Length: 143
Length: 304
Image (cartoon, rainbow over all chains, first blue to last red; front, top):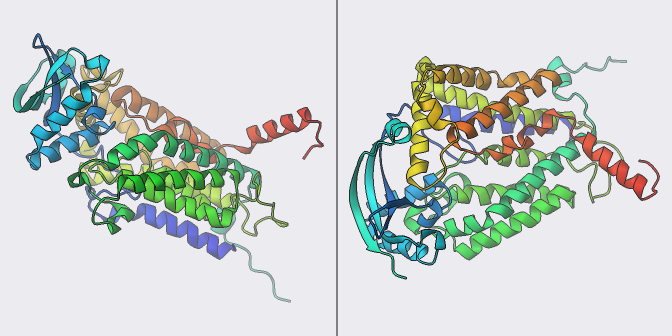
């Protein structure tokens, strides 16, 4: 490799890496990204779908993302959102119930609810204030 | 006799010499990280590849697919990627296998990012491996026979390219903030809200929230300071190219920034957190040289 080839490789890589700046910031890609993930204005109020484990006494337990289908929180959220779009939340609920049934750590969970919850993030995290929840699907955990 | 043309200052700067051993050490460290990353995530990648097809949102090179691959094929590609990365680390048939390892890594990680959520923890790793695969990064400390003569381009330009790629990704993050929010981003409210919402999502999905999130969310004024520091640090990333001292100082700041991200968002950018993303700013060959010297002395072998 001579200097010209090395310069071409260098320039090509740097230009490619910088190229997302020419796209809309929300037009993300991999591995060429505009890295806009923390750039957007967002309110502290958030609505999202998530599963809840309900104990026999009515207590609530949050379920780990891998039980939904991915160890990554955001990917797990997309799985639930897509199931909602496809109207397959009851099937996802049954899948989640099947996954937790053999797990000791969720032995006290008797049923699963998939809900749409709307919470203020600061109130929820700092003041333990729960927002509104609407049930989208419910199923029993069979053991 | 005509006088030889002097290289421009930019050429002298970009092609400033560096030892082959430094680039080799960088290859070994980055390659080992990539190998470990693929191996550790292989099971999760297989699980994700089994998600219903409606979750498949191809990005980057994976856009050539109209439907997801068979999960077993996806697993086989991940395993092949690991094998190629092992060859990359030890410098075996580097000219042929290193580009293949880079392409395989690009494919495997892009495929994992094609399931509804693009993560930003792996981008720089892929870019670094591609850059190393295009360079004479196995001229030292490799199974391949050492070339009779050092590369005519030297080895410093590759080191500089790795640092430039690292710096560029941070500058891009700052540009995105300024393009979308403008200077309003530094009022702290946006950062605070991002942190609050990210932690809320984690809490609702049964994941751990960040250790300092609730304390800081209760005192929002601190986020103005964090926001200003973030923009200064990101826009100032190119100082890492000015000289070794500034590069180390910036790398240390970047590491601190990522520790802050863990403390406030519980997001683990392991590549920078373990220092691997910044290895090119360090004399990475020294610990390897020491280790090799120690081993040779122990084995009673003559010095290098």
